[in-house]
Image 1 (spheres, one colour):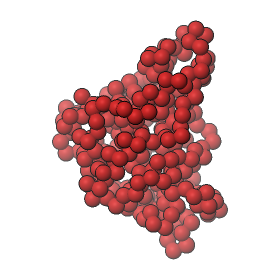
Image 2 (tube, rainbow, N blue to C red; image 1 turned 180 degrees about the horizontal axis):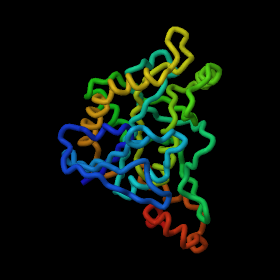
Image 3 (tube, helix red, strand yellow; image 1 turned 45 degrees about the vertical axis):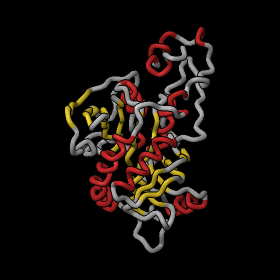
Image 4 (spheres, rainbow, N blue to C red; image 1 turned 90 degrees about the horizontal axis):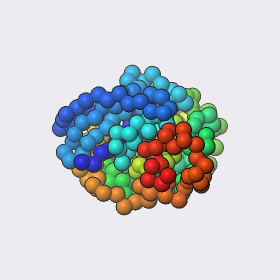
Length: 284
């Protein structure tokens, strides 16, 4: 059975048809993930859900234990990750309530760990194409099937947060040509690539940040209202996508570490080998 991970809000697992639901506590070399994972069966797929900010939204973007989250997904056998998140629109035609499936990320974060490697082992994975093209197409088609107004492609700028942008920052980001802005997905994408997991972002547009002179500046109330109205849409996208995901993978994601580990295996510390076992055992 294929295993599909979903990272997003705490209510996404409430999908009609999800059976054999269980809560799973997962421990990792980097500590606990954001919360217990919820696993269940949906048609021919095993689904694994993780609330990114914990139940009750208690964890700030810069406080998320990204390494534990992605490692926990890997430990659960996940090979595909659907990331559902709120974003601000940086372009007029990307309206609140619409969906964007980004193809690129610009990482503008400053303080967070975004690699599993270090402490005696070095790897350089390719991030030229950070999103799985195959999974992206599945999610684009699923969004259409779910009735979403969806845009395929574009660049997601990942900022540190937790504050929203200043007006100056927002206009500078727009001048860079980015399409949407958020606080989490670039870090997830980097770690998912190192874990050889296919990754795609389903970005739900909630606002126009603060650059649009004819719209109010983004507020938490606006963000929550738009997200709540799109929860059912996100569930329908996931439900439509799950059976369309292939049982096998032929994309570059599943072999991302093949030529990436530069440290000779004979000098890698045993502790590092044990810490990264489920990631590197094919190569070391």
